[in-house]
Length: 473
Image (cartoon, rainbow, N blue to C red; front, top):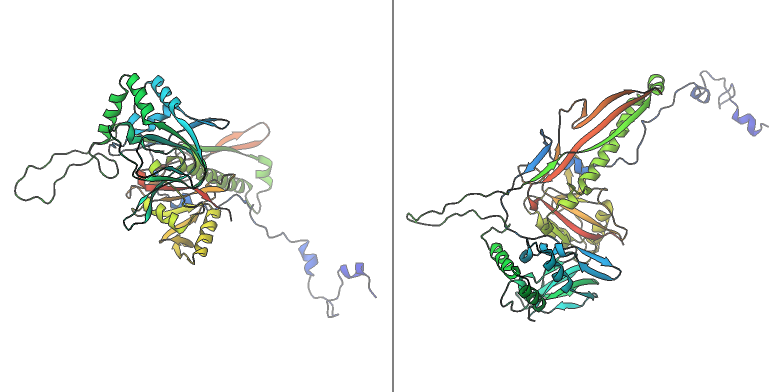
């Protein structure tokens, strides 16, 4: 009988009892090098945003976006400050209201801000009733409201939603007879609004020289001829006969167009010369170190293209292109609204993987099964034929909400483009350089690795965002 220790020792006989004719694999393995992978890195993602953006060469380091002059005034969102449960509007933020845009008397703006009254509401509460006298301005500090009115077939219809920073009833400031509310405002969630009675505004205007005149001028400027997108109109004639005098026109431009400067992500890669000299077989240690460093830089690049406050897509979408979900999770109706915001040849939809899963659950609940499309050699999910691509750089808040982007890409399509500069010194990849910095007294080799990039939205309707998307079950 053999013992357990004896069975583990190599024997000169094979399992059949005959003498071995070749080296045993257990012994041969001790003399062979292992088959190994290059260094792996879990941070590497698909980086679809970098793949779908058309990249524009920026030779001068700055990219200027020229647009037609727009007459739209004060279409921003109002910001607030809170002290405990008290909410106050920042006086300067009242300039976001079209009637007060450009008004610079800080004292009067402070009086107007003090005149706003706080009102907390709960879900289902009616804040304004259609047909009631229009006698106040309403600022949404927090929460979500539905604007509802009578439909064409004796049914109630939703005419849009208001959320944090939006305002309603601003027109009552400049009208002699505001009339009645056309729509009701119904709370979809709990929240807080600030209201300013028209009577309080008129009292302050009577005591503030120039305020009433400024409001009247602002209302008149807002009524200047413009197209449906708010751009200065181009006068044309059509359908005429005979020889009428044709209208003269010109295309006006923005006087101060937006300029985008290339941003940079950099790091210094250090490799000890002993490692580079002695441990470069079978894999080049410097190349592997550089490969992983570049992967990390590209991940940071995509993160910045989404989240950077200067040029990131989340912060550069036009406020009119920011939509809100109907109920919380991303439904097919919500994605239809998002695509309607970028209806001129939408290219892609970008969403966090958890948001894509949440959308799949909503489709399953309705018995819908979105088709897949072939996109750059991959089978990816789609909605209305538009690829839905994962992007883990879209942030998920602590409350479990995120955003979904839809965009049109390309310079010819007046869409979203990436910006870079090729042909830079020591270029290793397009717009990425690896520059030798020398060897220090500790025999450590240093390389400066730099990536240059930015992004630009050429026209506002090229990018739409569905905000506050709930991804929980």
